[in-house]
Length: 168
Image (cartoon, rainbow, N blue to C red; front, side):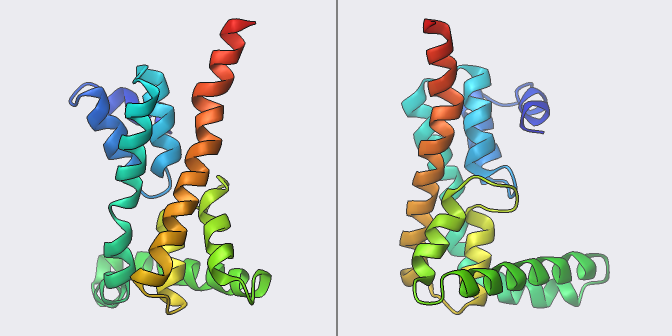
């Protein structure tokens, strides 16, 4: 998906702008941004900064406003199902996190965001934080650390392993 989007957006935007836009998107986030950066051969430090910034930018908005946004979505016909699905996903993942890390919720949030698996990431982490009643001050640092952990893992995958393979 990241490759197709990269190819499409690359026709209209600079490589750095594509990396930023993909990093802003739910599901793809920083993971997709770093893949796009590697495809475009964006220098690593530029790619890292752009991807982290793009991934973190929506987090305060999600934590502060998601409940109001979901109320609006559930009242608006075409978005009713999507709003319900987002709420169900956030509540379900939040319950799992509370069960797995009952006394270390913030650490659980960091690991949830940081380990790049399907359905995890900063967007879902922010959604979970909001549903668990964690405010921006108590959740953003852990989400940010999770994004940095994901960046470290994805950096090895997108920039480290290919570089090692070229040296062999």
